[in-house]
Image (cartoon, rainbow, N blue to C red; front, side, top):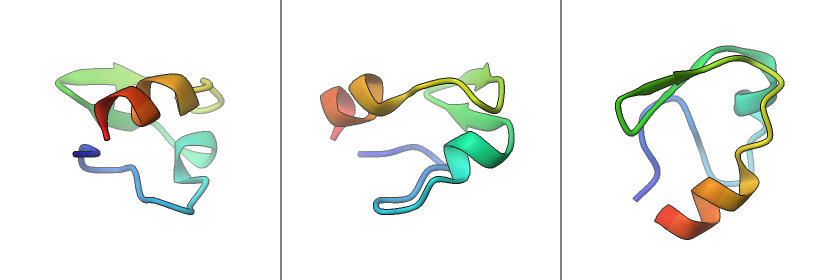
Amino acid sequence: MIGPGAAVGDDVRLQRVVVWDGAVIPAGAVLTDQIVGAS
């Protein structure tokens, strides 16, 4: 599953800080690999 703040088909991860799997990841971070791996 994708955590809160991330959505399939959306680039919100590039627009704002995303709270994912308990980690705060800065906007602009490339999370594609992690998101795919967690899906």
